[in-house]
Image (cartoon, rainbow, N blue to C red; front, side, top):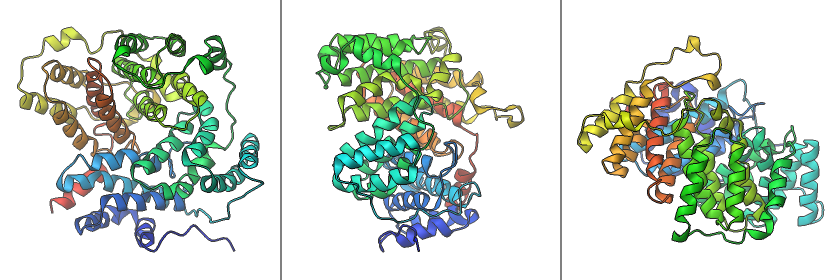
Length: 485
């Protein structure tokens, strides 16, 4: 008889704790374990293993193991920037989300079954069989084949194969790309490549299901027109590219029609811009577009998160040149990215006049003003919301953005604001890790982007925090009450 996947004796009891604890008790008991000395990283690993084994993938992209696994990287990094019991909060949020999905009737009860890897004749034969399974939507067979590939080819080669299917599907749903790439990154960052075969199984099954990817003739035409597969020979950027990067990034940030973005990028690459340079320009453009966006949906953060994830992949040795080019040229196609073009403000944003009109404050006073402007955002009247995607940011969000821009203009300490935003993000129980991923993205993009454009990421972080704050803080409030009791 089939049996469910089993884990090592060292972590199996902790995984079962997350699977079996009633949702009403999970926050209290998780906090109890962390206070008793349980490692945050081990708890996160157990949370990922539990949600992968005992939560089914629903038809859409909300629920099941997708967002807990995609959020693993960000949460593991945010934990390290918080101190004391405050560092428990991201872990508690992750465990509570995994536990919620395991016990939700739309996703459980469920068991990820153990089975033998399938070898149909070696590496090339398995790759060919995998693509054939994808064309037919045979997710179960694809899962069998990929288990063998993880064990017999280098991890990056296996990821490249999976992304060959996932990247073109970005136009159907951003998460076809996000799910496998973020899960891979999280396990790499946590030093757990041994878990790839198991924790990538839900991503493999998700990526390989129907529908098949749409044809991308416009992108293929750009590859051909600009001879990108042969003329792009530079991977690493340098100081000599600063002007070109800034020009491309600012041009992307001014785009009103996102279909112009891949053309701008292809031209820059053909003129000699490096892959890393194009990724940095994409990041600058993402910040510019996000600051122009009027979206009030706290999950519409993929402008930033997918740009950040692409920059990571562009630097990953072993990923094919074609996939790296497609990462750049298809960034704009994700529905949750492209939808932002229909609710944009004109440049420049934030409004320089509104920022200049603000009274002077010291760093401490301005940090407190930013914090209070986020905490005092008007509550959402959910009776008026029929579609998250149609939500618009309330005017008070601009107040937060203007204060954050003033903080930047005055040259105040970036790390201080990042730490405060990290603590604020931990309130979020609504976005299924989107707020955590966005915060981690803006921190990394700030450090990876050159002057003077890096500061846009910090302001974007404040904008996202203002949009997401207060939507649902149930887990945070319960944990905070327990921590102070």
